[in-house]
Amino acid sequence: MEIPGKLVKLKFPIILTLTLSLALSLLIIFAPSFLTILTYFWPLFLSTALFLIVVIFFAKTSADSLADKPGEGILDYVAGHPELPLDSYKSD
Image 1 (cartoon, rainbow, N blue to C red):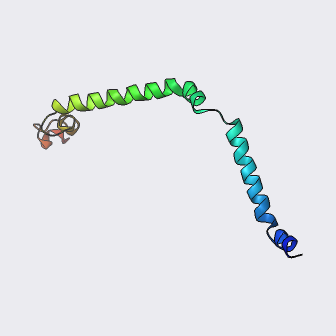
Image 2: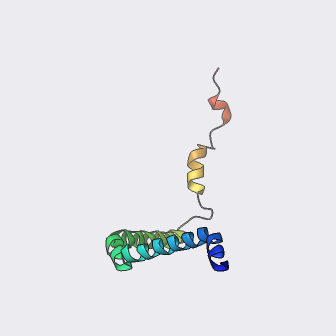
């Protein structure tokens, strides 16, 4: 009588273990294989790889042609014309 009492006490862990193992087995049986996923997504993988290669290529080639400080030209453009005095902007 001791074994059925212990089985009743462990009823929920046994049911949970059986359910999880059944779910895992069904997932392994019905899941698509790696090659199926690869053949479906190969255009996405290829385009992403090419994009990353182009980004790395432009990062390496443009680093050689930069000025002393990166962004110096755009800062001068945004700042305006420093040669104009501030008095010329005042209205009378």
